[in-house]
Image (cartoon, rainbow, N blue to C red; front, top):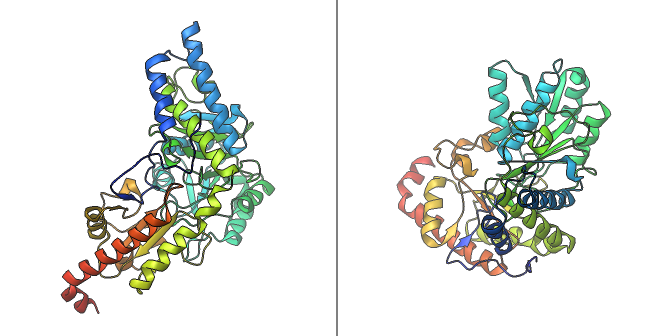
Length: 404
């Protein structure tokens, strides 16, 4: 049974504003996974009754994920993560088209796409063209249309993320889908951050492939999915057994898939009840409170359409790592960009690609809400952020004078 989305699934001493990195699994997710591990741990490929009980749970979960995105169950391929899902789409489509080696994408993509296409190009698997974008992170659709018109017969795939994981800037997915469909070009979108936060329908968006990850919508880590439109060819990347209709070999992660299905059903209920509307103002309220106290705080991506849960803010003359550590000590969890890059001292490639000055890119912190974040959380967090920034600046006053 799905719990009430209005009740936070946990109590915690900290204000957790790093939901783009991961979300806490719902209690019903953890319960369903535990039940699977204890009582229904058969191999879903086994033909006996015990194995087929596990198979039935996998297929039910596949239907739950498919319903969330408007797909048919047979179009959902379970895998280990969003990264593997993206790799299956990009590598698989290029390999399925011997005469099409061009991938069009942007410098604003998650590293799972951006670094992969750069690698594939470096080893001669494909050629990459980068679509232009505005300084606020919006893709230039006219430039995309021009690239497709010029190179349609050479394009294996267009890959553009539907929602940026660092800035929250959203893509006009349906418009991109229409542009691609008109020229017979396959379109993949990384919808990892979209799923469970705003409505996403693969038919309405006219996508051929879409990447998902369970732990971004209060499901477990270690399980993702690829939507592959029926009839859209993709070459398997893991070869072995016949699992996932011969598209992804390896015994399925049954508990993880079950958790994904439960999380998908809960997200669908939340979206169907228009619950997201109540959160639309929280990000704006947070930014207003911070900028009222820290007037020179810069919002990266301002002016673009952004998802309700993400705010990327720069605080000049400070290092993002220092801010994140100070916030953590004060009871607020945030991040210095993408979680997979948090160990790097380099500024975000996404922010640099947007034209953000390196000094500001180094000083940028991402705050990301969940559907359980409250107005009280936002008010407390804004106060703590402002206090930490002022204290850090007071300690580095000489450095600020030198910079100015």
